[in-house]
Length: 499
Ligand code: HEC
Image (cartoon, rainbow, N blue to C red; front, side, top):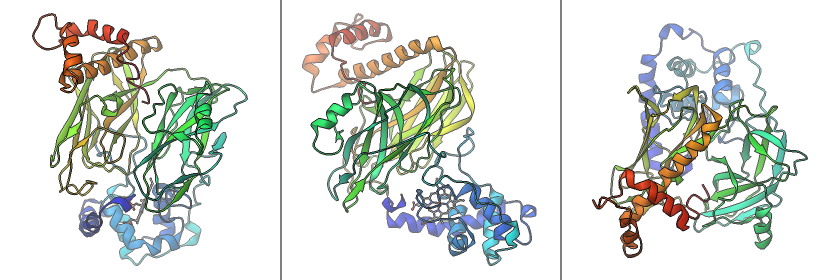
């Protein structure tokens, strides 16, 4: 994680830590801090509840926080990192909308840890020690109903460009199943940046695998558009269950396809991913889909960030054609992104923030699940804004000196999107939403084609045929005919493959 962050930032974090910890103490309610703070009575419950699920063997954190010795050894550091809110890690700004999976200590809890450290970190009465929570070794969501593993390890080279590789995991399901969660477990955490999951029900992926001598097959420049997308995992992410009324259908003959993105670490690594699958106990009663702004992770948004730009902005918007309920939101971008904002302006004019990130960290790409469903009635305007800092002053900039960055799959390229997971109020309206999403994507395609200087000769005369009022632009009224034509022409073939 922070292994990627430059030393300077780390020491700045540490430097500000103590000051911030002191400041936080000021905000805490002194009356709530007991005179004698002990590990067994006060600190252990807090750590078990907020820290141990990551700070235990085999999980993402670099050391365990499971007992008195663990905590005492790191006491000072614990005070620092909780004081700055560096731990527990959570990257969406607090106070705009409530998330059920937000990891956050209260001011009082932070003050309690500081008080314990100040009092010399006493252990206290062992009888007061609460039981360690029942974690399932090797899993976050508990014991999976089905565990599948890559049949053989994949060797990740020490050096070179990022690798996108597909792996086929046969599920051998004896009958059709409904699935509520997929938990991905990388074995070489240092080099696995993210993995996307797909379901192949036609045996195609197995054929691609056979053609490639290595385990799996090359995923670079290869779309997985023929497969059903099931979301994914990125560094730092904890898996989430779908809400109880939703599920994915896994037919008997399904294979799980993982598209894994590796970022070489300087040392040869071997990856054998394991995947846990959690079945639903009953068929879903509702349907769901995603709304991504901009669609295709920004592929059609003309992303082109000049070297040195400090706040390059990528915006998109969409008006929902049907009533929706949103249940989670997921940001995605690479190193240069700085801020994310997703807002919904309801038909009555009320504006709500669904996601705000003021300090993006590439190493923590996570789903934020809304505590209460967010109602987005028909006619709600949803707007996304992502800003990027491609200056030398951005400590996360992978290129020093900075160079122009465009859209692309490498971590040194950029992407950008905010994805809302939504449930249509009425199942039968899902098709209408899909059509609106498709129209929005085609409109972005048209916008880009109009700007495309390289293909001006071929494309622009054709687009001009649809500019009925000859104002040099393709207006809203002129677009439906053009979209229909493009759909028929075959020019949109593969437009949203792989997404
Ligand atoms: C979601 C998983 C997760 C949770 C929950 C979590 N941590 Fe961590 N923690 C990490 C990871 C990953 C690292 C390594 C981070 C890095 O180096 O950037 C880390 C690092 C640390 C460090 C070392 C920081 C440094 O500067 O090297 C401390 C101390 C720490 N955590 C304390 C805590 C405490 C205390 C809690 C609970 C209040 C907590 N963590 C909750 C994942 C977690």
